[in-house]
Structures are given as C-alpha cells and as structure tokens.
Length: 467
Image 1 (cartoon, one colour):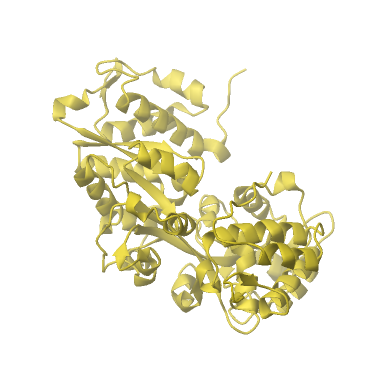
Image 2: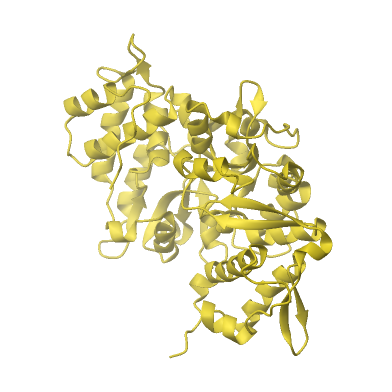
C-alpha cells in the first residue's frame, strides 16, 4: 500500500530526509560524484510528496552539497574541490521546530560555502550527554539551555567551553544569565517566558472575559471550572510535574529557599514549604490527563489545537506547533498571587574549547546571532530571537503564520522573567528536589518524609534516576 504523506508529520519527515542526506555526504558515506536516489524513491522512503522532496534537495543545493542535473538526477559535490572545512553542530530535539535550524544552515552555507556544517541531533541537554562529545572533539558547537550551562558551572567544567564576546545587540538579561566570573560562556540564541495560551472561542461562547495580566490563580481556576465540559474538554491543564511550570508557583508564593547553618536547604516551617504544600493541593485539583496523552508538550498542544483544552501553560517555543493551524487563540501572562513572575527559558550556542576549527565555529555562532538569521527566526517561527531588533520587529511578514494577536506580550512582561537559580537553589539540588516533589505530589511521601529527604540533600550527591 502506498504510504500517504501526513501533513502533521511533514516537517519532521522533511527534516529527517535533509539531515540524513547531509550527514551522509559530509561524513563520506556518500562519495563525491555519487547520485542520490531519485526524487520518487526519496518521496516513498520518507513519506513525502515529490514536491516536498524537491524543496529539501534545493536546501542541499544551496549548501553546495549537491548539484541537480536535469533529466539525470542529483549528484554529490566534492567538498575538497572548494577547500571546505567541516564543523559539527549538536542540537537538541526541539531545535528544528524552535528555529527551523536546517533552513538557517542553508542560509549560512550560502554566505560561507567553504564551511560545511554537519547537524548532529542529540538525545538530550544534560551535562552527561554533552561531556563525551566535547571531550572527544566530536562536536564543535552545541545548543545549550540554562540548566545545562549551570551543570557545567557546578561541575567546574566551564573550561570545556570557549569564552565568547558579549554582543550588545542581544538582550542583556540573556547574556547575564550565561555569564560567570565576568566571562560569557554561551551566546544567547532564542528564548521564551512561560505564558498562558487560551482558546478564544471557548471564552466567547460563555461570554467570559479573556485572561489578562491581572488574573490570579484563583480567578483562573474559577474560569477553568466554568469552561470544563465533561467528556468533551478540560478547562485548564498545566502539568505541574515539570520543574519549569512548578517553579512558577514556587517563585511566586515561596520566593526563595532558606538555608540551614550547614548550607543545606531548609523547608520545615518556611514560606517555601507553604508554597510546596499549596502546589500539592493544586496538583490534586487540576484535572489530570492520561500519561499516554501527556508524554510531551507537543501532545498537549495537539489537544489544545483540537479544542480539548481551553487554557494551557506553555511557551513561545511550543506555539510553533500552531503556526500552520487555523485555531483562534491568544496568549496572556501567567496568573499570580499579587506579584507577576514567570520562568525564563533560553537556548544559547556554546563552542567546544577543543574545536580544531574555532574560526569556522565562531562564524557559525556569529551568523546564527546576526541580524539576518535572527530576523528569519522572528518572521518564520513563534520563537523569540535573542537580538533585540529582531524580536521587536514589526512589519509585513513574508510568510503568514498563525500568531496570537498579543504576540508582543513578551515585551511587557520582561521585568517578570526569572530563572530557577533566583530561588537560591543550585541545578543539582533543583533536580533532586523535583524528584522528591513528584513523590510528594503523588501521595507517595508525606510532608515529614518529603522535608527529611530534601533537607538531607548535599552537593555532590547524584540525582536519582527517574524511571
């Protein structure tokens, strides 16, 4: 039976084809002069239309990796003919959706035809996953979020990274986050605060006021109860068992963690323990979804797209899954208890100090944070570029996408941005805390046991492995 292309999976299948062909060419698995499979064969192999395959091959042509010969096929070009150097970019699984990374690389290759970039998808963002690649020199540039950066810092491994020059054109608060001991270790690339997204038609149907910056958590829960329709839709789902989302509640209500005389976290009798207790009550009240439906944010956003969820907590990154939809939705700040605070998510670019082609690696990072690349991100995705003028650009978009009408909300709420370290907690402690917190939320630990386990956390203890 013919495999029919699915519009839902079109982008990942196209990215898979382009990445596979690119890597096979750069690594030598496909030799210079060798012809690619026909467009029809590639369409069948990757479940794409022939037209989509042609668009993917055009990217490789733009990168100088192949040449199309009419009525013959696509032939691999010998990189050595142009004296090209090859560097490897390691990226997390969300980057293709976050920034259209392969199209950005195609733009880069047009400007720097003698620099080949092999895009290497990584399974995660942890220090343990990055470290072997950096030590072996297998990666020259990596995408790195704030949590990963803090892991390198706490393990005294920042020297694995190349110091970079601070760029005045980027948001200072992003550069500050990736700065330690007066040095910038990771160049900011894209970012997003946590926000609410809501289905406007659901509110209109009930004549309800849409969410705004004055909403409290109590107001949100009251509206969510009114929006809920049994066996049809859920009014609000936040999935607080993720650290970033739970941290919003903890920051707003608990402010920061207190410390005992020995430097360990102190919980019993503190404002933060009250916030943790409150978070457990919220976790119990919010309607839950089966784990099979909530494995990834993308699955939750699919339910939101289908009208099964009225309000969700999300990020600008996740809104990319709605850019080709017709959903009538908008965004609002996270609710609060009086002081509006939200979590800041950010992704940067780090250069491996052992990189053998540092000049080429710097050119790649400079290009990705350039006005051209950052404006491309702003105009073609819902992600927020690190460059101020690109993020705050306004004008006629070259490719219309489904953006919320309040897309520029991020500018209004910049003062509310926080990172988890603002709660007076380290990255290792953060992971261990949320391992215990999940047990506490699930009713598998009482408060006394939870406090005891958290207050016993000491630096250097390995985080428990979550099954």
